[in-house]
Amino acid sequence: MHTIMQRTLQEPEVDVAPAPELVMMWLSSPTLPVGGFSYSEGLEAAVEAGMVHDEASSLLWLRGQLQLTLARSELPAAARAHAACLARDAQVLQQVQAWVLATRETAELRLQTVQMGRSMLDWLTRLRPGHALLQLAGCLPEPPCWPLGFALGACALGLDETHTLQALGFSWLDNQVQAALRCVPLGQSSGQRLLQALSLELPAAVTQALRLRERPQQWQSFSPMLAVLSARHETQYSRLFRS
Image (cartoon, rainbow, N blue to C red; front, side, top):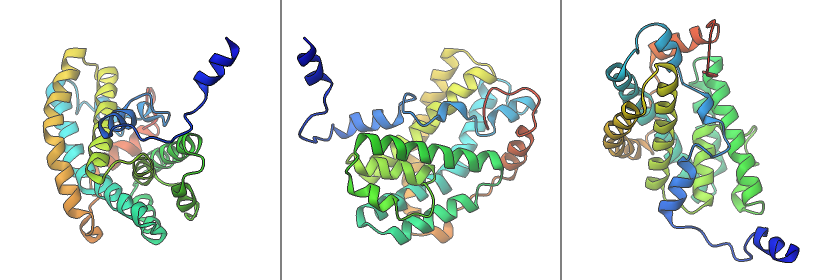
């Protein structure tokens, strides 16, 4: 029995990549050990300020985040990082890393992208300890930020750039809806309606990000109200989330 259990727990000798759809679900799952569930990305502060208070205002907030931050910065950065991983281009990865870190406007938002990226790299190192992309990540002066780390993991698991951006986008959406359920608060049915509405808008955000992939001069990270709310959240009296 002990021998059978050992064989069951051992990793397969042949490294076979799962189907892309399964990898997408894997990487966008809340169980991925990167801590995304602990961040609200300003939503909790928006609730405190009375800007988000029900399902309709939650939809407006998340739609704005998707269109103004994800589609114009996080997703294009991940797309360019994915291409750089395939090309083994450490210089481009360093450029993406520097841009993302420079555009985090508060300590909380910077902490989030650094912590989640580092956790992603740690997970990938345990999952694929001999993968060549780990050496590429070692060329960075510090652990990868979240968009870069996600692209690194997706590339190592065989996802193309479109599937990578879809998984990253849905991962963000799922975490944000879960945050809304807890801090607005909303019911499960409201959460499902939010997921349905914004999932329909995610493909357009991915398409926009792919158009911007090779045009970093057109990337934008300009959401001043988010920056103000994020800064307020750092000293907010009662908090559930880290951002």
